Image 1 (cartoon, rainbow, N blue to C red):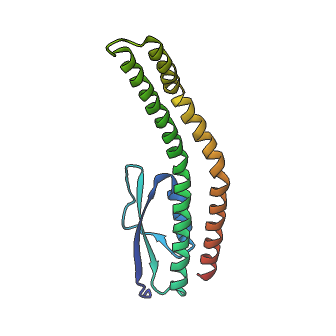
Image 2: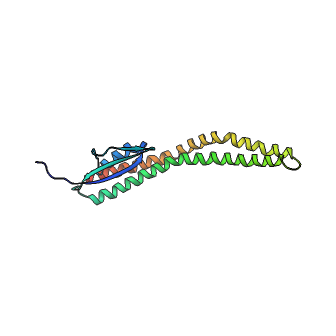
Image 3: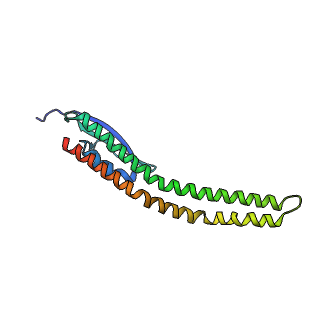
Length: 170
């Protein structure tokens, strides 16, 4: 006859591209994937159901380390998202500024007495700003990715050390 064992249960919703990292990390805190509940996928997110024996020693310390690990992973996700958001802000600013110049150009040409030289003077930067929006997006995204790469690596190292401490407590 087998021995009675009770479990703690939790579920975690993470980005689909980080699922493997989270599953590996949670194993170091005593969690295992609950085979009775399927993994739920939807809209780029994955919900994983986990269980851990209630008889685990040092549960408080494991929980503290787990929260630290989750914070590290959250910061990594925020850094990865910042590459896209910085690039998007730069491109949208360029496009909207181009629209403002083009609006000024239209007002100059539709005035009671059209001011052709002002229309041309305002249209040139408008077209230029529209034209550079996409290359600006690509360049800012590349620049930001290079800038946050060492920060992401440092956070991954920190998460790894937290996982080592958690594994040592099991």
